[in-house]
Amino acid sequence: MYEIVHKETLSHNVKLIEVSAPAVVKKTKPGQFVIIRIHEKGERFPITIADSNPVKGTLTLIYAEVGKSSSLLGKMKVGESILNLAGPLGNPTKIKNYGKILCVGGGVMVGALLLQLRALKNAGNEIITIVGARNKDHLILVDEIKKVSNKTYLATDDGSEGYLGIDFLSDILKENKFDHVFTIGPTSMQKIVSEMTNNYHIPTTVNLFPIMVDGTGMCGACRVTIGNTTRFACVHGPDFDGHQVDFDELISRMRFYNPNEKIAMVLYDGR
Image 1 (cartoon, helix red, strand yellow):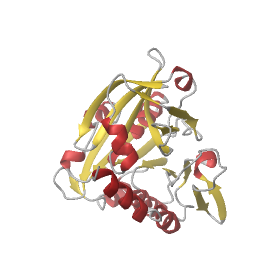
Image 2: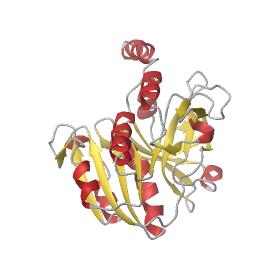
Image 3: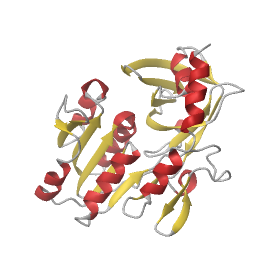
Image 4: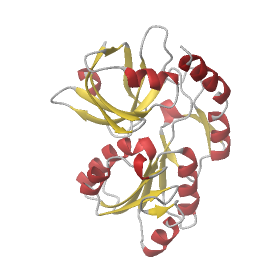
């Protein structure tokens, strides 16, 4: 059992929890994730790790309430416990001194980006960061991001804060010489960033989160096409070369269970 020791709301549907998991914390690195199951009849679902505290033995998880399971997690209180928590899973992000790097994070995944940023900063990188969200009310952790970035840009889909959309990235790529780009967030955003950086031949690392079940490569649900090869995001990733990802296939697969998820939410809301 994994006790929730702290909880806070970052935006209207985005929650942050600290979970006691000392054994997991000892091996956690940026870019990795956990798979949790709330109760015996619950589904298994992944959440990227946003932080870890070796002294307290806690993991920080940031997630959006978008489906039945995440909504149930959102209703849990401090002092209650999650039944299962497997991790850390996946390969950690390769942290080294690349030089001048661009980091692009969107939505709820900005929490995971922050963990990467801190490690990349400690490795001596010069960091320019773009933080995106649906609108200004959905922007999270902006002050924390600014503390570890040499320069920070904000962008929203509706233009309510910072730049409108992500098109301004093309100007940033023209004005700067980057040694590497990291992006984590909505798959559609990562696709756009990868397409833009490919025009400038800048190595780009994406962090993919397709449908997952077991997190060990056994179920095959998280398969993605990288180049001409099938890979499993849970064991070969979640980081991949963004210029090699078949994003159209990935997005199509991620939408496969949308009808089922909508039915589950309708039944859940009707209780």
